[in-house]
Length: 137
Ligand code: IDP
Image (cartoon, rainbow, N blue to C red; front, side, top):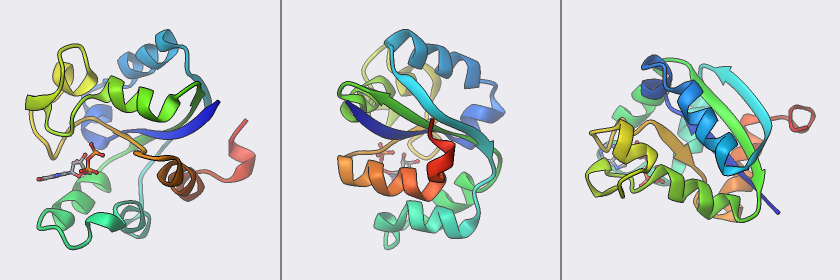
């Protein structure tokens, strides 16, 4: 059993995709053990995307992710880390497999609707950044 951090990014929330994405998570069979709609502070955004600090798109990425409400989700299930990333599809929607969230709902690499932790270490770090222990049920 694994836990992972999933997020519906501001473009997904703004476009009303939250119910569709939660439905996909439910149909897949992952348990939602934490869920909240929130606006991310710049400090949290910079910590969350710290590995991209030196990349040319970092400022744009922080502006985007703090620019409107997101839905932060803690998911639990067998192989949830790789499984959720599989449901999201490749970072660039042009390379995402048909039927994945990014293929179905996104056109640009910058605004690609969802986030998912890429390893057990990232999942633990990101869940800790977004949820207090009392918020994970
Ligand atoms: P991931 O979200 O599929 O794990 P990462 O490479 O970790 O992809 O990048 C994190 C996020 O940064 C992406 O989801 C996307 O929103 C943004 N990003 C990545 N590469 C670019 C780029 O070349 N231009 C603009 N934004 C980017």
